[in-house]
Length: 558
Image 1 (tube, helix red, strand yellow):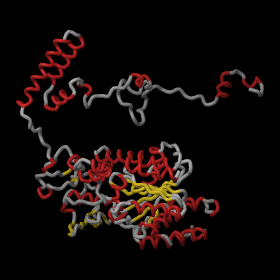
Image 2 (cartoon, one colour):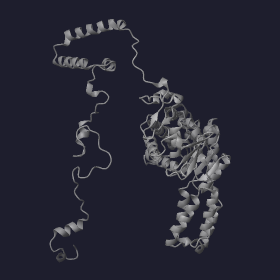
Image 3 (cartoon, rainbow, N blue to C red):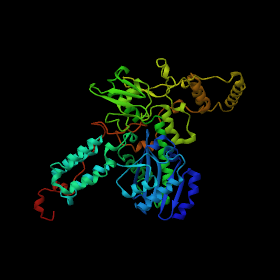
Image 4 (tube, rainbow, N blue to C red):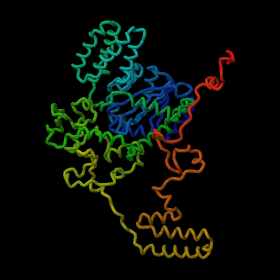
């Protein structure tokens, strides 16, 4: 298998552009595809990297480890490594191999991310630390309380049922403390509480977690996390890999896994990133509209204090407290924005002061172009291709005419200020009509010759009538150009018309779902629609007894 894997490396490089390296003992494979290489060159990759492993993907039970970075379009893979086990030596060999084939501008130019977010696997974490010692390791805030909850429910620890929720709540107060002093107070209260004093084993267990508090407590996290405290992106990627890439069927061996990764997985991410860049995913817009409703009480810049150096003071909704907003760092002193997540106070600054935040949702053409570049590379269209079709009047904001950052007014509508060069242009008639006169004469001559030969056929006469109707309906240059390029295509088959469905497919449709070639309805059907389904008979023996009179008189054999 290893020899076959090595022989296919140049084929994958020439066909897919993927860089693959193989180590024999311990067995390890490092994969970097073109999308992964372009993702390394973005500033997203310098902050956080999610790492998670999965197995049971092939017949030989190899371990696949995904490395991902969060972007405005979701998580984008940075690398995929395959090992034969979950031992520290296998992980170290795989990460070392990956570090050799990564581009010079890996992880946003820093050669390592600022933070790795992983599960509580000592082998994986030790291998990451030995390969990239400058990166900070943090634990996922979903798996940590899950591990504590499982410990509390284990019968070997003898924790009573009514005390489990109390102890779990005390641990959660430590984990979600936002300052170090608050975390220390929460720990002292938890370890000396009346409930915890009854279980000496739990106190020792809590002390062991407290010694590693910088790995899982929010008080020791910074704005570089951008609000990402869990490894959920990696969990979703594992599910997509098994569902979409492998189709819930195990691959034959590691060679098949590499082939699926460099082809099927690469095409899936290219399609999803392209959909986001083309505005087909509305998650960012909906999130921005939701924040704009929360910030609707901030209608004027006079309500906000300007401290200078891109720092502002924003009041809360009832005016009892002010939060400090730092534009350059992209953070706020509120609970939502203190770890780098975009909040309503930052949205108010971006709206009223026309400031650009590094963590703002990607609603601008420049940011969507950066996502499209990850997907398409050099084939990516220019930035103007991703601008809005309608230009917003910028006369009221002369100082920001060259800005492309989103502006959200108090009404919640999202607007984009475009430069003057992005305005719509009209058709320019560069060709002189006299230069195409001979083509018109030749076209008419050919039509007359063909009509003299085949004009008596009934199909030709009806076709001529339809062509004449189409010519009479043309009212613009685009319609005339469409007719010249496709003279035989009727109006109903152009863009915007319905797509026909084959009769065999229509015959298989269930009665009452839809009619003709209409699109099948998605989601839950409305109440009292469609054909009612007959209830399934629950038990054959009950039906027999119900139909046989005096079933008891027939003996015990019935």
